[in-house]
Length: 64
Image (tube, rainbow, N blue to C red; front, top):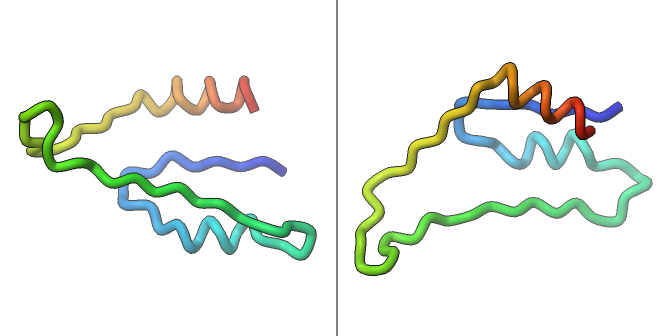
């Protein structure tokens, strides 16, 4: 069964790693990014993320 989750809180990668890990897998890869402080001489003050959740869920399900 394939599963996804759209969250609004910080992601705790360990819980997802434990969810997908089983005896048939040799590895689980998790990528985490870090926001740079400066880009082309401009300081990053904050990031803003938004999503229209019903549309995002529909698109993900259609492509899964």
